[in-house]
Length: 449
Ligand code: ASP
Ligand code: MG
Image (cartoon, rainbow, N blue to C red; front, top):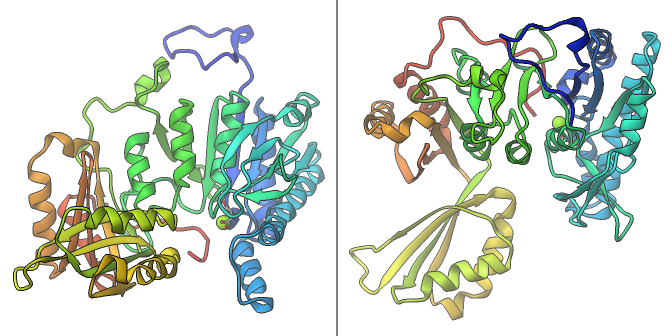
């Protein structure tokens, strides 16, 4: 095992200082154009010059992935996950790794670019949302041992059985970085984007949102699962499982970002402990999500087994459900309405599965609504504070926001509202919990696409 950073109190002699291995991941907005690529190259070279081994994971330049999807849509009406679509999309990351390596070499340092499969990212065969089954970064290790900076294409892997190239799902480069950092036993994994860290809300909606210095991985998981786009959900799960510290920061500034602490980790070093706030703040942030849709199955017979049938067939259709609510309408005895939320992208699949089983299930109709937004308040401190839900609902009420559905976990309250009211609701809740900062947050780049 590599030597970890020493406790602060320990006297460090020159001999004891060991080299760190740092994995740095740069998102698309950080490498949007040649200028951006050169800026990232300088930063990476500086990190190496400071005495570190560096492995870089990079996303496709700017909005390349979306542009490739648009291009696909111009030649086919069926842009769904497939072997060919993965071949197309992985080209984006291939461009950015090669171009970044060239920029680093131009600065007089040595870099080598690698595709996901060359870097040993082995996945299952599910195109468009492949899961890592194995990470063998032997070539990356050799490359850095030879003094190179290794540049790895994010978001892609290879399935061993088929030999085909796969992608890990949108935003998957974070997961590539975390998985590599874990496999290489890196000291830290730095995730660079166009904002200074993890904020109490999306600064594009709440300009007075403030950066968190630390956040626990438990809170980060809830935020990422509920729409915060700063980190890919799977990367947070992965980092938590492997007890890896993440540093989320901006590639446009030298400011310290947010440390995501794997708080339930078995081997906390003194450095880790120093970063855990003694008293958890009540709330760590307000997340929002515009990608949800709501389905209501109206007039389902109110007998045992009805819900099991509905959810059984949605499960068969591989539809992931989010919130679920069942209501017995007082004006229609003997029947019940079942509502749930899901990803808009799965809407057509869910509707078809339900319509196909209409006779068998005996319901009256299905209502589909994409004009919904989800707002989630997240904070480990709410576990022990009964006043949180009161403040939350009072803020929504004062803002005139109607609540459609509610769900909770130990450290989260979520509501579904009308989409047109979502931004206002986010700002109202953010203010009600005293999260507003004095000044406005900086968003350096990105089109928010
Ligand atoms: N380029 C891919 C995307 O836009 C992967 C990533 O950025 O992490 O989803
Ligand atoms: Mg991207």
